[in-house]
Length: 208
Image (cartoon, rainbow, N blue to C red; front, side, top):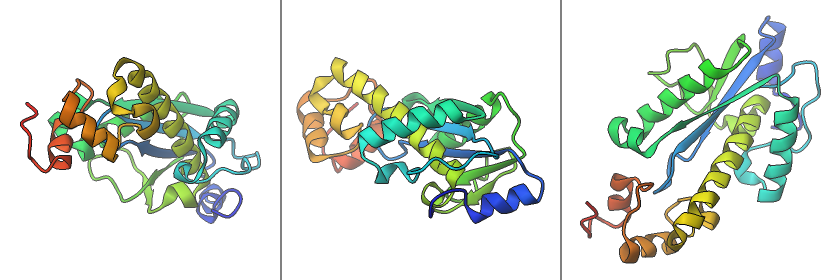
């Protein structure tokens, strides 16, 4: 995304889709914590906020700064989560699709078009256009990516105060060596994804 609204978004607006919802999720891969989805509509008549790009490419302080400004400028923004229990019940793909549907349903303004990061989601019963690498290529999706990342990181940092062994304030629940080592010594919490943890440990331990 080279500085502003993408060609796709400009084309959609020219075709009559003035209000575009960008949707992205954070947290599909971690061993612990929920998936967090953000759906956001940015004002079509304002310049894109400088510096907005894929949240993974930004330093934490910059993400925080941008998230605050994005939320202040947004026409509408909503959040939804896919819990550890939902991920265990439905699998992470289906749980993520359900969270996306909830986030879109919670928007207080109805979008004219929906852009989703990645590939088309078969079970998302909302017409949408998928953009591979959309969080780095599409302004609306990048804004959603930043807000979702900041919200999830804050949540994991709060949980880390209750469960300090796993380093979630630094790894956000991802399977770092320190996190995996802590699983071996401290075991599971209610916030761990059991099947993900089994895979990370090579099936060596019975984690219940």
